[in-house]
Length: 382
Image (cartoon, rainbow, N blue to C red; front, top):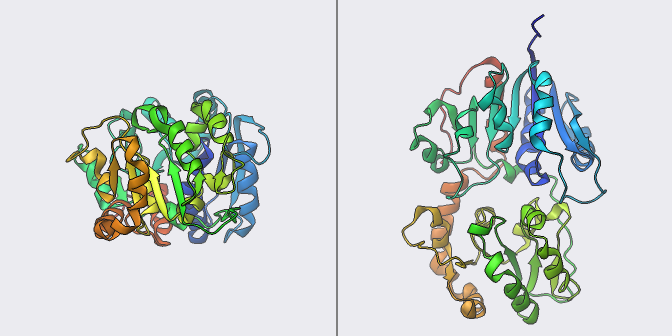
């Protein structure tokens, strides 16, 4: 007997908890716009605990949390997790998705399902980051029924690769509307400007393997800035030495180390910092939604000038020799007026709208997918 496909939307909260702020504002917008049932599939008890705390605030009681096959209990309070194996979990989800009309995800692993299987479920992929180095050529990128991106600039990168224009929708930056930010009170002993160091998690793109430990030592030894060391969640998971290196300076009064709390991924630290130090992480673009001084680290000796993959490095000085790091940081505030207009233009073109309309646009596109209707205009944000 053929299973009946129901007007139901599945949200796949199966990957790292850093994906939650990119998905949950759309859940809220859908609850305001429609009473269609929403299944929030979660892979761990950490996902379950956070979403459970927020569901009572939805406009309608039309969302329920469902434990994905292979669901795993994890230590309470941590967001850096040993996740269940994703592919077996996805395979066991297939019977449920056969009865679901639309599935929404924010990561590429889930896209193996529509890539490999002729599912009746229409997949909608929403971006979980933005930046010039995104892997848009992966064949899984072509399998969603609809792809939501933040900006027209980002949309154009897909059109340049031959994607169908009516399948790529610019909504604005969904995470900007995430309301559950931790907004921790930072425990610094003295009032100083705050510096955030955020190395990328992939070794071939990151300053961490070659320079990370020395940068941590340099920042620990200085007293000009209060320092936040809250690296990308996947760096903590993939580079075991990170805990030891950062743990050695965690007790200093001007250093705040965070390797486990939700604040490291919900935007709290990019909002709190006065100066950004990083390499190729897209977190800098969130930071530049409110332009502030930036310094970039070229630990790989990249041929980055006039390379569109490094477009964000036009927004601040680039350090190519670690001996020059502290002097560059020291003059970053003074030199910021030289970069402010570049930063504003880059953030606007990369993020699109950073207000509250992005989740509503995404929700409207998803409700269209429920009916099999593509947006009348796939564009819509600057």
